[in-house]
Each structure stands twice: as structure tokens, then as C-alpha cells.
Image 1 (cartoon, protein in one colour):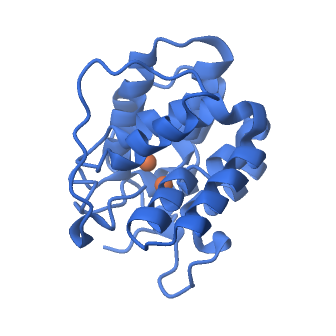
Image 2 (tube, protein in one colour; image 1 turned 135 degrees about the vertical axis):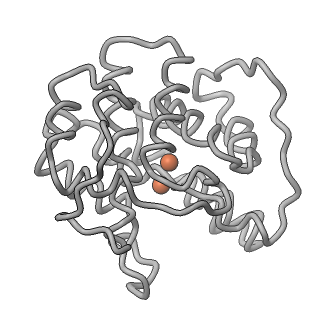
Amino acid sequence: MKITESTKPNLDFHTLLRPENDLEYTLLEDPGFLAGLDWGLPRYGHPEGKIYLHMLEVLQNIDRLGLDGDERFYLRGIAFLHDTFKYREKKGAGIGRKAHHGYLARSFAEVKAPELESVYDLIEWHDEAYFAWRKIYLQGKKEEGQQRLQHLQELMGERMDLFYYFFWCDTRTGDKNPAPLVWFEKKMESSVSLIPHREPLISWPVTGQYKSSMG
Ligand SMILES: [Fe+2]
Ligand SMILES: [Fe+2]
């Protein structure tokens, strides 16, 4: 079934996602936002399929970090928005920045979520560490990958810790390959506060079948 803004999911997202601030309640009233929650079929990286199920996993990871105040508010806001507009991505629209769901999420946030202004860049570029890793390890373009990471660092500035926290929460979901997170932590160990791993992360072999485990 094609998901559009007039598609009304028959699910109680208030019970599922437990909104905890005005912004989250407002988002759960927006038809364009709600349409995106119920989108998605099981795929590599996302055996759960639906966006709201992925979002639930990210929110649980945010809980595990034990943060509060602005950090929790921003991380939850990013979790709510980051993948929700995948349903608006147009196949065949190219691979440019504006075709990516991160850009679509940012555009939505600029209108509907002014409270998240200071993390608009993070919402838009939330998959960029994965893309940098993919350039290097799946496409063999080391220099390009390093440049993407450098650009991400410049863009995030003091928000790099928050970017890392979100990347941690977003990667440890579904059956995503943890290799991009392991690589990112190694690259960033002197510039971000690393989250201690309570269990070992096992990197999968980098082969074609995992190429699409992003998001
Ligand atoms: Fe995600
Ligand atoms: Fe994504």
C-alpha cells in the first residue's frame, strides 16, 4: 500500500512511543508525521520493517544512556524525526543531499519543530558517519570517506558528542552491522566522550549483502 499523508495508521502511538514533552505531542498530531511512522517493510538492517518500531529501539537506547535535560530532549526529538520521512523519498530522484530522508526530515522540522533548531544539521546529516564508513570500506574510496568525516566534524562542531550519542542509539538497532560505529569510535576517541560498551560489538564481514543496512 502506498503511504500518503491521508493514510491514517490504526495504531495508538501515544501508548507505543510515550511522548514526554509538548513537541512530541504536537508531532503525534501531524498527519505528515504520522503517515511516516507506519511505513516500511523488513529489509537488511531493519528486520522490524516499520519506522515506529525502529524508533522504539532508538528510544530504548536513549533511555540506556541515562541522560536528561536538553540532551535527552534533543536525542528524542531527533529519534522521532530522523527516519520518519523515508516514505517521501522519491525513487530515481538521484543520490543528492536533497533526495535523502535526513534532508526531508530537516525541512519538516524547520516548519514544525523550531525547538530543534540547534540540531537541524544533526537531523539532516544523521547518516553521514555511516556514509563516510561506506565510502571507505564498501567503495574503497578512502580519501573521499575521510573528507566526508572531516566535513561532518566541521558541521557538528560542539554538537559532535550529541551526534555520536545519536549514532550509537541508531546503530544498535535491528540487525545493523556495528562496524561503522566501531570505526567511528576509533576515529573519534580523542574528541568525543565514548560510551562504555557493556557487551562486545561483533563486526560482521563487510560484504555486499549488508550494503543497504543503513538508516
Ligand atoms: Fe534510524
Ligand atoms: Fe536514516
